[in-house]
Length: 548
Ligand code: B12
Ligand code: SF4
Image: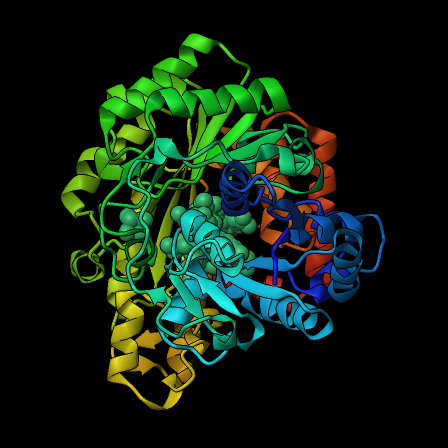
């Protein structure tokens, strides 16, 4: 078999049900990120294999585009059409998280069943599945593990008979191996990131992404801002128990040089007209001087360009000098992983954060309000009590971030948390993948059967969200009403019947002197309350007054 044509597919992150049955307007606001991992793979393969043709098919982007123009989305048909038109010998599928794993399995199995094509899967989630010898991998022939630029290149060379050994690959279909010991267990780790070519931005229509969807940091840019994503470094110094970065990328940070980062920004800005960049790093500010050098380079360029880090920066790495530089260089949005307000839970999580760091650096944010801060909090960590959870709420209330994002603890495969739960409990854990998609409350003994406790965690978390982000929204009570209004407008774009958001909008518009809009928002609130007992009860339970 000769591999001369490769098709790389970005797996959709939303279900067919959502694509085909949602309000078209809502689909416009779904996150649609350029498939950065596939762009790196494409760049490396094109650099080293001049006789192989490669195309990227961003099925997430194409599905959303089709659904928004009233087309019926059928992945089988879309893939069949693409496979027929391009004629690949090998198809690569990316599976980043549990949420897209089912889709990857369906698409992979469909393509394999109808064609004589080698199917390769890669990405964080499938790496975790293969590490755990999960029995759901039958949809592919090989899994390329971890960062796969060179594992994938070597695999293609192996299949083409140019090498006899492969690193970083799990063979699912062993018949494709010439000898069973051709696979070596060591990984090919990319130590010097600058040796990688730039992501192959030419292989997708990157300047069109902003027309189809949004970024997680989109509240600080207008919807007509062309955006892209970059990765300036890989890995993270911390080892939070619930996070898979360490097991995927190793325990240190490998970084591109500031020169190289700025060159990539130049290309995105000048060649593709990009005006906002979201940085995907897990530990962007691991080296303050490096961050300042990048920021200085951006300032010097005087581009009409903004940037964000919605993946998360460590609060403990920030200081006035750094935040000044970041803001001056166009940073509009930073996410911060705070997770808990309880010192013991923070320790158990191995979060690189203490109450002391919070006390010292929390107030910093208020001194740099040009940047929008979204703080992330996790509830329901195994064994967490109601009172410990309540401390998270107090901390969330205390510091001047713009938005608090609450999530219920979700054990991700190939994390210490997940492995502990597997060890401590049988029953529910026979099928390990259940953890990855479930949002169930977890205890140290495994996923809880206690439905009352699950419900309590859910209600507590949901109520925190309604109280802190709506009823007591710091911007709405006077700090930055424009910013608050933008947030609530964004919410009703996605959830038109959110009565708290409409009530907040009526308050915000009134404060801004936008009387007509305020009246409209009041009417909308009232309309929802006329038909929804749920919202009537929530206003009542949380003591939120409807603006009359
Ligand atoms: C951007 C991002 C998102 C974006 C979407 C990105 C996208 N393209 O669609 C958004 C904000 C929407 C998002 C959402 C979520 N995310 Co996210 N996200 C990321 C983030 C920060 C960056 C991804 C990235 O671009 N990486 C850079 C590229 C270069 O790396 P890569 O994609 O991994 O690709 C490399 C390899 O994986 C491999 N590879 C990848 N694909 C393929 C395919 C083939 C064929 C081959 C051979 C190799 C290969 O080679 C590539 C090059 O080295 C990662 C963290 C991280 N550092 O990766 C988390 C991460 C992927 N997300 C994660 C999670 C958990 C989520 C959420 C479930 C969070 C939540 N609780 O809501 C949601 C998903 C919700 C949903 N229903 O869709 C986890 C996944 C862990 C897991 N096993 O599930 C990660 C790893 C973060 C973490 N450590 O916890 N996310
Ligand atoms: S600091 Fe963030 S990226 Fe690093 S290990 Fe913890 S959760 Fe993961």
